[in-house]
Image (cartoon, rainbow, N blue to C red; front, side, top):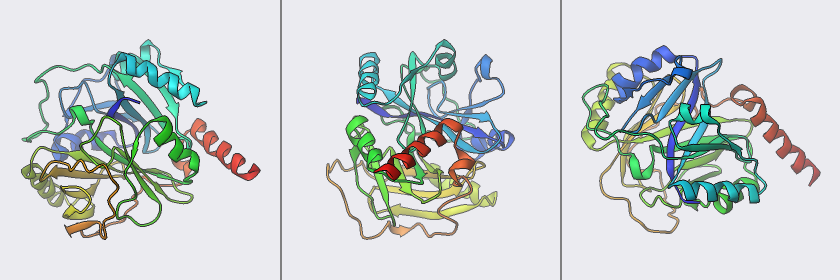
Length: 322
């Protein structure tokens, strides 16, 4: 599939008031205009797109959907055909959903462990319209998507890897230096990073572990780091540099219970084309000062909707019958 990367993310939240101040004041997000049909939700901008993050009122704090961006109309239609040919149910978005997402067209589908995905093309934008919520040099998005996402899956079946590599057409970038079963994947059109999404195996657990946001310079990382410390926000990892990527970053916990990794690249991504096997996670820093799995990772029953739980149940029935 000709996918650029993650175009937007949607969450359900019990803490909209906290996000309303945290987004602009800590991260530098701009509060966007909410659609008339979704006035109670909170929309954030990090560039000239209409929005990149949406937080909808909910009974729990959870990841609601992952929005992938197709290059254009023809690629969008080809992707829908590919999913259907693979036996995956595709639900085309109606005019109401297109308006909420601000896109030309969109459809929805599930991965083999139940996470809700969307694919769209043609999101609305206005050049030079992004105004950060505080003094900030800006975010790196556009041609590579908004950043990356790491989710936890209670099962790691062969169907999941087949779905990501053979159906979605993602490049498999290995497990990195992490412990346990983890897999990094990047979209076919993105050769600027090691991963757009990663799945980590957490038996009996599910939910979003962290979101990686790229900023344009080291100063933005450092200023955000200072704000996080001044506000005494919970930290996961201190400032450091990864081995696998030319990234300097730190991790702290958001109001949603998942971590935000604020990242800048010291040098361009190395287009190696092969799987690296680093001996350690980072070359310096990244001291672990908090839990790897925050309160956003719980049981599937806590963070999944009924349709997602049925996908997991069907997977369990299939494994039992094998």
